[in-house]
Amino acid sequence: MFGDFFSRALIAGIGLALVTGPLGCFVVWRRMAYFGDTMAHSALLGVALSIILSLNMTLGVFAVAAFVAGALIILQRQATLSTDALLGILSHSTLAVGLVLVGFITTVRIDLMGFLFGDILAVSTQDIAIIYGGGAAILAILILGWRPLLASTVSPELAEAEGLRPEVSRLVLMILMASVIAIAMKLVGVLLITSLLIIPAATARRLSATPEQMALVAALLGVVAVVGGLFGSKTWDTASGPSIVVMALIVFGVSLAVPVGRLFGRRPIHGA
Amino acid sequence: MDALAEKETLVTLRGAGVSRGHRRLVHGVDLTLRRGEIVTLIGPNGSGKSTTAKMVTGVYKPTEGSVTRRAGITIGYVPQKLSIDWTMPLNVERLMTLTGRHSAGEIDAALEAVGATRLRKAAVQELSGGEFQRVLFARAMIRKPDLLVLDEPVQGVDFSGEVALYELVRTIRDTTQSGILMISHDLHVVMAETDIVICLNGHMCCTGTPSAVKRSPEYLKLFGERAAQTLAIYEHHHDHEHHDDGCVVGAGEHHHEHEGHRHG
Image (cartoon, each protein chain N blue to C red):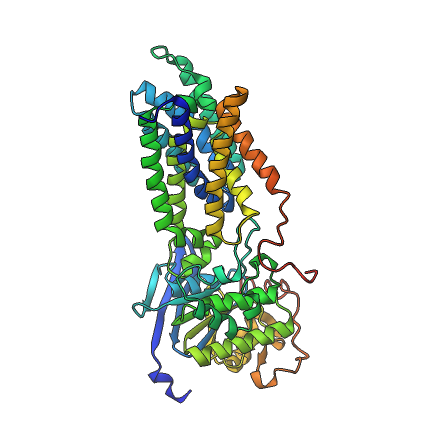
């Protein structure tokens, strides 16, 4: 099924980009970029624990990422250190603990580079099934919960007063991020996952007048980055994961040339 | 105002209060919100105005006393300040349907009611303070709320804008017959249409019509003579006059004068 490794990589990458685009918009809107990075870094710890406990790796990574999110919420309630510092501690310590644990594992040979930077050319048909199954579930939750998720992002206070539950929305988004990290790790690696969330969404911002447009455009730009990056890596024999990110960056650079004012609403006429 | 007793009651608070840990945020609040009536909460920072409003909207459950809310009422909320980051592409039209689905016709009607029709396609980040407040009013009104909660609606708006916004509140009350709960931090203008003013300072320290509260000893104790002199009551038929006492002392000045004061 799905012929050679290159078409499998394309299909897997496109499936992932369709999910990271819209979810990435929330990451950008809610300023969760560093948070996403922290969850991604913890993924290596998830890998190590899955091997040691012989668990399914996707589940293991999801569980650790979700655990880190929960730890952050609890630490934030203590209100002693800034969120920024807390994320710094969680991010690097989970990565370090993961790396140390990997060193202890002698039973299995672990391709560390594969986990850090991904190996999209090695995806199996089963991986594709996980990406599309999980991706469809994530998109379904985003679409069904779109209005409350968005309202809670724009103003938690307003959403709460009008009967919505912004805390639930926050939790849902954290769980979705943990899921996407678990799905994406094999493809682009723990160090590059957040770029697929942030760069297409940031690029889409300049091209959109409404949140819905931004989500759609981000998904499409993610697909462009995946296709362009993979063909680039085939042509110039470069690492596939980083090539995708470089392609996303090129698209972002090009988008900077688009004048913003013309695309949404009137321009500011008066000074203030 | 004769038919006061017959007006439909929306929310009733009886001796209501909220505690967090050992701290009582506010206690002993009695208040009744009825359709077509305006209730204004005033008090210094940290006096429990927002907490009281959150008990009314149901965000906070009272830890003492009771809150009775009419089943199925729709609440419209105008926040104190809403800063929307540039990263969120949001125009006025889209903001109108943030918490509920509304038709294009309803959006037109709501924007027209606040005089903001021409802003329909504008990005929210480009609006001036006054324009944004009007749009937020329209957004709350489009829900056809039974109860409208206005959290310091005139903050950051200049005096003429303020007069216009109070005019708007009056129109909303008259046309929609919704109940209105207004929170006010600046004491200098309280609408004449306000049916009841509730003065909070951790508890309910006085309540009544605006002119009664202005004269009440508890109010004078809480805010001091100087601040009391600046409690102007805005009457809508004088809307083109600029009150000479319309300017208040700096926001911080009249808050700490009576710390540790016990009354009531």
